[in-house]
Length: 131
Image 1: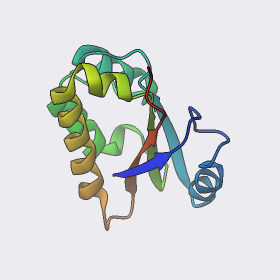
Image 2 (image 1 turned 180 degrees about the vertical axis):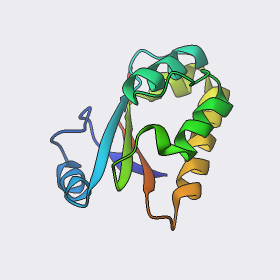
Image 3 (image 1 turned 90 degrees about the vertical axis):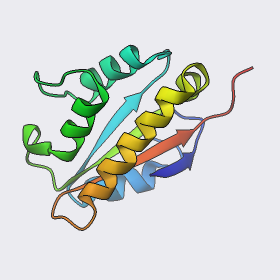
Image 4 (image 1 turned 30 degrees about the vertical axis):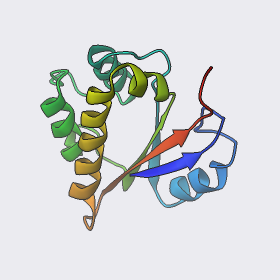
């Protein structure tokens, strides 16, 4: 998992623009996951379902998220996907244990796809702390 420093909500503009353009030019899709306002696991999983357009069989639990990220047959056609996660600080502060599990799920999915024909990478956008 990679961390990017930006005050923008990406995926467009800001310091990541050249990276996102290169990713798209390589046949990869960029998937924004804005977690602003997310404070608990249920809201996190709902946001993932909506933002990532997860399949109907997504069970809104950690195992189901891991399954969706390691089996992209429900979203064919892309050479790879770059998941750009922003607005995550509040969730990390409010539910640090669940945020840790989410990071583990992301990291495991990235590791699964490493060296395969399709790929998945996750970038966390670091925003200034609030307050």
